[in-house]
Length: 386
Ligand SMILES: NC(=O)C1=CN([C@@H]2O[C@H](COP(=O)(O)OP(=O)(O)OC[C@H]3O[C@@H](n4cnc5c(N)ncnc54)[C@H](O)[C@@H]3O)[C@@H](O)[C@H]2O)C=CC1
Ligand SMILES: O=P(O)(O)OC[C@H]1O[C@](O)(CO)[C@@H](O)[C@@H]1O
Image 1 (cartoon, rainbow, N blue to C red):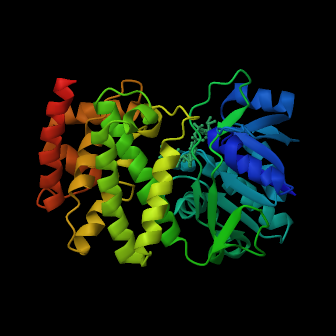
Image 2: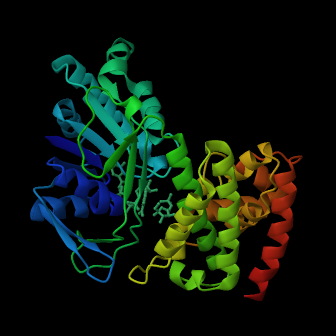
């Protein structure tokens, strides 16, 4: 069985590659980092180590890689593959679509075998977004066949894999916990057997619970921590102001998840508690700038901060702590982050009101707009004192 996985980075090697390998797939990575591709092809194996006291480690063998520029080669592999997965970043999906489209058009001419393509990104409907990018590139005559033969099941993936600082560039240190949930109703053909993957008939409650708890909480800790001058999540979370605000934010998103999806209150509190303990993992050094990376993406209307805040108004709940989280994201000015620079340039040139609307799509008249403005002013004073 052959799996083509786009993105041989932290989640690619440290989570998806590991599970696919353990499920018996030959894993072929596709990546645009030539050094990484060469190293995978040279060593053909790598180690995944748990960031925990026992440092359990797994040897992932028999892997290979293709440079993402070699579209012809990638398409040829996709034409015969049993599964395609991605972990490249949701904004990169349009760039891998041409190779996937070419692979699909070859496949539907040469084999009737179904193929599933699963985007493992932090986003709602990641595979569906990829499908749209791919279908834009398919010839009209191929679309009908591709609709039935190729599945794009949406997925939620959860495992914290920080930036790596290992002697061997392929080794990945990961938290022991993982969760990979896939929408079975979007699968083409039979369900791929991957131990560790949970198939559900409706992914929405799962992806929203994960994105609006793990990722919302993490982002708020990262942005408030950055504002107060901390370097890592574990430093930031020791600050009572940061931790209490993160807990309040998770209480707000928790209300939304309970009201919208009917999650049990006690079970959800236990879920939040477990996640905060994962953030505190003493064996992980996770930089606030990694967790806060790409603030424009994180401030976008369907992402972890704005989406739950806006939806809470439908249930007459005022998301004042989420507003603080959004304001802290607007203050994120890490000079090494291209999106942070773009955001700060826009803010300097256009002022706060236009910036909020431009990046979050929140209308100036909406009450959330006013809440963010107020929180932004308060947080700016804290930043000045730092
Ligand atoms: N690191 C984590 O803890 C988690 C990350 N994710 C998601 O997984 C995705 C990847 O994140 P990370 O692994 O942390 O990032 P990463 O930066 O470590 O890995 C991304 C990889 O994609 C490669 N890439 C970029 N453009 C490409 C292209 N056009 N074709 C092929 N490869 C390309 C990069 O060279 C890099 O090796 C993101 O969507 C992230 O939100 C989800 C859950 C956990
Ligand atoms: O990968 P993104 O979307 O930039 O966000 C970082 C987030 O992803 C994770 O790495 C895993 O979900 C979290 O640690 C963090 O909340």
